[in-house]
Figure (tube, rainbow, N blue to C red):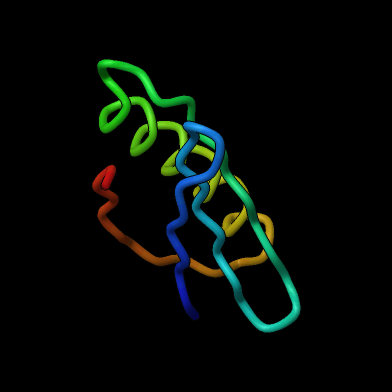
Length: 63
């Protein structure tokens, strides 16, 4: 699995790649971007990987 973090149009884009599947989570850049992004990504990723039966943990820091 690989994780790509990119900045585009004032947003932080995090792309999770697992085999042929992709999960893209976009976080708005705000004064609390770190907390919002990590929270939103964790929730979204948890739902996605619960459906696929795979689990993992990670940490995310806004650039």
